Length: 172
Image (cartoon, rainbow, N blue to C red; front, side, top):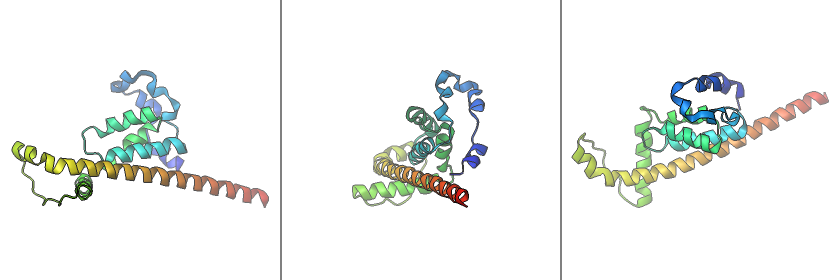
């Protein structure tokens, strides 16, 4: 895994601790595993960040940060990965999630029509909301687990290749 690349772009623990709005967390931010770039912390960060990026809710970054604290994952990476679902990618992601949910529930996919009114939203909330959240949950679990397993595999493969390269250099 490109450890140096990640260290270059992720904020340092000191920068995050200096943010006044996070002082209510106290000593939690001093936990070293929240900042280390190792196989377990980064894999958990991908699990958390990818999961929360597929869930349609406000403040996804807060949920990812809380789960990163709870699961002792790399905090900045968990929060950064949530931005996979940004204003450009959200519509296709959530439409796909809706289609997965409708397929799982055996419902037909409704035609896309949107009206910005309270009556339309309240009337369509159950028709769209249940398949959307079911599909989002299923897609989030699958994508998060796959990303965790792929990252574990790639990291181990890289370490194994580095060891073999060092061993070959020593035996020359």
